[in-house]
Amino acid sequence: MTIEGLAGGIARIVDAIREKAAGRKRLLIAIAGPPGAGKSTLADQLCEGARAAGESAEVLPMDGFHMDDSVLRLKGSYARKGAPDTFDVRGFLDIIRAVKGGEGEVLVPVFDRTRELAIAAARIIPVSTRFIFVEGNYLLLDQSPWNALASEFDFSVMISPPVATLEERLMHRWLSLGFDEQAARTKTEGNDLRNGELVRRHSRQADILLEA
Image (tube, rainbow, N blue to C red):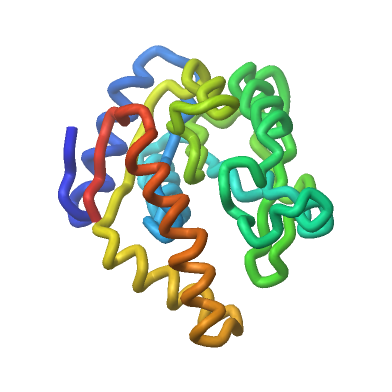
């Protein structure tokens, strides 16, 4: 299913997820897309929509599994922060599988973008939660080791705005964090948009494609 824009889209997506979840105790929903696509906003809106419909729901951000800057510098990957190999994929898979099992509450990390670091055990996924909205760039990436996630998600949404929109949002993000024009341009064009192209070209097909 392809949906153009968010207007009216949230309710339709929530309805589709609830239909998929009929008779099931827990559902993991992947919210994927390029950097700057609006994944966090979409995940929060879907979570709110599910709660408004009487469901229990939480958001689990992939960004909490960024490798620390000190590790990235040691590995020589600091300039590429945000690329697929700059995340703790094993740790992310372990958390996803624990959440999928639903046998107890799970504490998950959250990324603080203002400080560019992950905060451990910053969010709780209670055992009673039915819908878990997992958001991140590479959730549907069809490349190892990310393709190990393929069997973990029960439903998926890909949000994919035009490249010009992504570029504008990404530039605004880095400028608002104190980067000068040249540094923001380097981050946007030299890393983020390249990672976004990887997501667009090499991700598995989602249940819903949202063009926003």
